[in-house]
Structure formats: C-alpha cells, structure tokens
Amino acid sequence: MVMHMVVTLPEITLHKRKTQEQIDALKAVKIDIGFGRVHIEDPDVEQEFLFDEPLISAAPSGSALLHHPPSIKELSKWPMITFPATLSPNFSDNAPGLFHRRGQRINVKLQVNDLQTALSLVASNMGLTLVPAKVRRLQLDGVDCIHALEDDNITVPVITLRRKEVPNAAIRLANTTLDELVDNRFTGWYP
Image 1 (tube, rainbow, N blue to C red):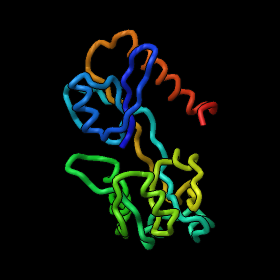
Image 2: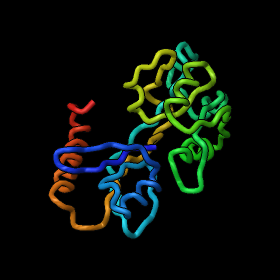
Image 3: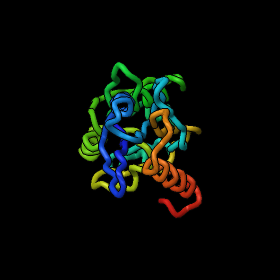
Image 4: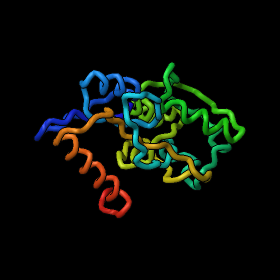
C-alpha cells in the first residue's frame, strides 16, 4: 500500500490505500492526490512518473547476505516473504517478475499483507523480503537492509495520481511542493 493525500489549506491528511482504491477515491472526489508504484490505465486519472526507487533486500541481522551485494540468483535460494498478488496490478507483482525475468524462481515461504508484518518476520529469521530503499531508514531491531543488489536496475517506480481537471489553488500549491520535494531528492537535502 502507498499513501495518498487529501489537501485542504492549511491541512494535509495522509491515508494508506492500494493504487486501484486511490483511483476510485480520486474519481469520487474523496482524495486529491495519490501515490503508487504501478500504472493502472484510467481515462479520468492522470498518472505522472516521479522517480525510480531502488529495491533492496531486508535480511535478518547477521545474515550471510550482508557480506556482499547479493544477486537475484543468490536470493532465489533463500526463503522469501512476499506480498500476495491481487486481481489488479500492485507492488506484489514486482518481486516474482524480477526473478522470472532473470530466469530464476522465487522461493516464497510466506505471504503477508503489509510491510510491517514482513519486516517483523524477517526480524524473526523467517526469511528475507525485497523492499523500497527508503525502508533502510527505519532501523528495526533484528533487520539489516542491504543497500544495493548486485543486479542492475532493480527499481520500482513512484507515480503520482491526480484527477484530470484544472486544479484549485490548494492542489496547485501541493503540486508545486511535490515538484520541489522530488527535485530536491536528487540534490541532497532530502534524505
């Protein structure tokens, strides 16, 4: 799940919804901006690519994987904690696809519905999981995040979703702020 925003000056409220739920909420004017990781075609919703975020491996502390950047081939030998696939595209489709495109099979040990549960299971030495790079900032007991994988281009997109309409002043301000945050993400002040 990813976040979306409801914008009312001077307040921004964040909620978690899956991408398709955000599209439905945008069309019903229940939210103003959404953020996702998969593109779902809809004629009423504008989806803008913001940037690619690297995927990293979250492994139990002390894991042998922590001594070098592992490859997808190496990860295929380890038990993985993944997210269940659904009828509509979502983040869970990324991990199996990464392995399949490299001629590997993913060794799924458990499927869970949220990142916190996956990381708790990693901390309990139940397996490892692939997560967006920002997760390494969480610094959870029992979990070490590998900063990079050996393979190139192991990333997931970050996409913003908006209604296709002329934005009001609050949404224009939110869009400007978002553009600045994305731009500054690459110049260093945004961690």
